Length: 197
Image (cartoon, rainbow, N blue to C red; front, side, top):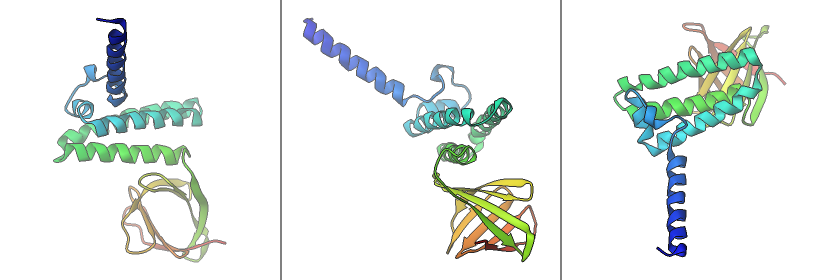
């Protein structure tokens, strides 16, 4: 083989290896276990989401102190276990994709890695002591972190006929033209809140 042909072949092999490496998830597919990790390794979209989640996690780590980093690592391990529970889902790829998309958005909002609007303050039920403070993030999907008293809730955008609606674990925030309807806690009564100037 001529030196020129050899160099061309070597470059092609090198480019192919780079593409394969870029297409792999952040974890080692040779050590993949269970049903979900091999699925991620074999699905380019999920591999890309795994790499993105790993990048965002790495960006979040320096945004907190050593105790916060330990907590974040523990949360990430818990999240991975939850992602791997997608083996129970009817549509496993959709379940895994949703887990990644929501985790990426959660990390970006919690650690302020993307642009935000706010904080915006709302007084509820005409009571100055009942204040909800919401910060909105340009994540995909859009997210909001709402605070009420000493509690905080991570919320994701949800469909609505008008205005902006965000839903958390047991909380809901629905804002339209400066008025928000907020439910805070399972079975809690709805509060009517107005945006403070």
